[in-house]
Image 1 (spheres, one colour):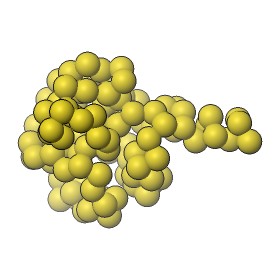
Image 2: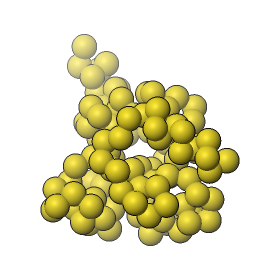
Image 3: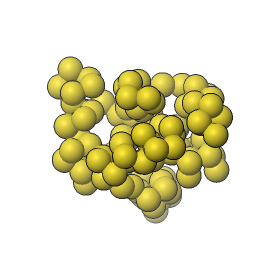
Length: 109
């Protein structure tokens, strides 16, 4: 049971995280969303699972490993590190519906 829980909450099931500045640069170039997340977040896991293979198209930023990412999340959420925070076209959206995020991906393609 412990191994299952550890695996589900592992950052390994998420696509490779990049820094917030790099994610913002890439998003400006390709129009794809930036997802700020952290390990152990059930809502982040739900988003990741519901996106399925499309998750690889999103720019992921682990706020526990990236201070600039954590600062961006706090700025968007009244000082709180609420994740997932998804940034689309420079606008933050806190814990959006995964179907909405998938729709944003189809618009950026």
